[in-house]
Length: 212
Image 1 (cartoon, rainbow, N blue to C red):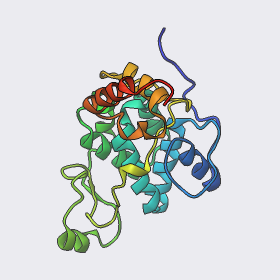
Image 2: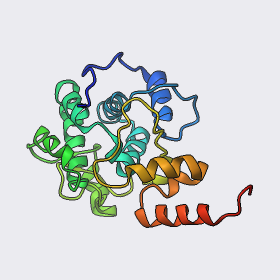
Image 3: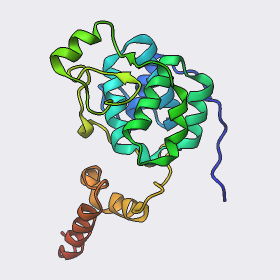
Image 4: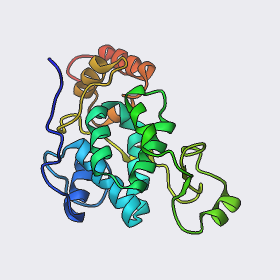
C-alpha cells in the first residue's frame, strides 16, 4: 500500500511546542518531550526557527539530527512542505542539506529550491570563514557556514522510531534496525547506523546465556 499523509501541518508550532517536538523526535534538550510529534513538521518549523530567527543552537541540533537520521524521514512530504511553507533562507538550508546527503536521492528535488548566489548563515561570515574555514558539511552548497558556528554532536540525536512520520529507510537494514531496537535497549541508537555493528550486536545477544 502506498504511504500517504496529509500535507499541511496539523498546527503551527510556537517555541515551546517546537522544543517539545524536537525532544520528541530525539533531539536532546532540557525540556519535556511531545508525546506524538510529527517528524517532518518538527523539521520544517525547526529550520524556520534556525534560518528566519537566527537560532544557531536549533540549527546545530537539526543538522546533526539530519546527518544521522535522514533515511527515516518521509522525504516526499518534507520536500513539499519546504516548497510551500519555507522562506528563501529555509530553501537555501534544505538545498545545502541535500547537497551534503546527495547519496540519498529522495531529497534530490530540494536542490532546485535555491539556485541563486551563496547565502551567508550570519552577518560577518566572511571574517569567520577566513579565520576558521568552512564547515565541511556545507562546502560547495548554496549556504556559507563558518566551521566554528555549529557544533556537530550526532550523539545528541536519538530518533524515536514510533514517532508519526518515522518510516523504514529505503536502503537495507530496516528489519535489522527494528530487531536490534527491541533487543539492545538504550544502546541501540549507537549501533543502528552500521550493518557490521548491528551484526556484532545480534551475535553478542545470541551468545549470552539465557536469563542473564
